[in-house]
Amino acid sequence: MKFILWSLLVLYPALAAGQSYDTVRVCTYNVLNFSGAENAQERIDEIRMILNEIRPRVLMVQELANEEGKKLFEDSITNVLGIPLVPVAGAFRVTQDSYVWVYYDAETFETITAITLENDLRDQRAGHLRHRLSGDSLAFVTLHWKAGDTPDDEAQREQTGRFIRNFVQINNQIGEITATVVAGDMNVYTSEEPGYQQLLEELSDPINRPGSWHNNVDFADVHTQSPRLRQFGGGVNGGMDDRFDQILLSPALLSRYLPGSYTSFGNDGNHFNDSINAMPNTAVSPELAQALHDASDHLPVYLDLVFEKNTTSVEDEEVWTRRLLDLW
Image 1 (cartoon, rainbow, N blue to C red):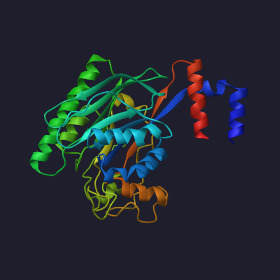
Image 2: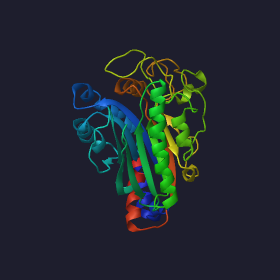
Image 3: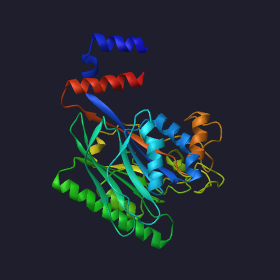
Image 4: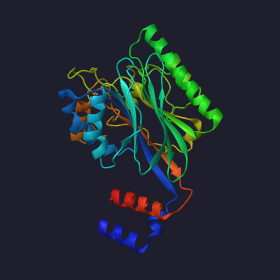
């Protein structure tokens, strides 16, 4: 099959450049207190296996525990993936207990600027990237909100939600950024929570699944925590019963969202209050289910966005040739 495809590309080079669209996978993943410690090093193979299966071209990560953990994550995972990912620029700033970062495929995007959304509670990280083939300029914002179900916890999430809403609103007004993707571990239990409602003033849930997600079997297919029944290596146990991890889109991006692509990776909808590695799992192989169970107390979430090319060039032909060959 590779020989047939290669022959087509040699005989008909326009086949590579003639494609009108580029489908880009965007992923968010909480990697559970990933530091330079032994606990993190033991999970490198599992995280790398998961991300190589997903093949994201933008990755938004939560819980890089420190600079040592960030460096280890890059040296042992993002730099050596099948589609290598590079970090947006910037330096760590200590805010409470978690660091977040944005990574991207440098063949697909170029950096316009890196943005740190600083506030008194937790920083949010953003990469302002330009899609090379379409010229579209997007902000990818990743967040990790305060966990817990007390009124104070909700108030902190509302404050950071208002902060991000204002950021997106300003972007829409000045017009320098075409659209915004906001993704991460939101730690919200219901779509009615004030912090989440702040986000929905400027963003949309592409699968339109509002409700009370916590411990509700009606949302079993979109739950992301916890893939573990028992507690080990830190994190949360108790089985799949929360939709903490989400990707939200500016309304302008909804027309670019590929219907049906939103995925809580590894969740087949049949593991409510169960561990993700309980067989059978009809979404992933037993090896991937075990990796998801061992790698983190969250599942990754991804979706696909479709961009239209606005030019054709020799460089474009080279990129598309690599993409087509990579598929085979």
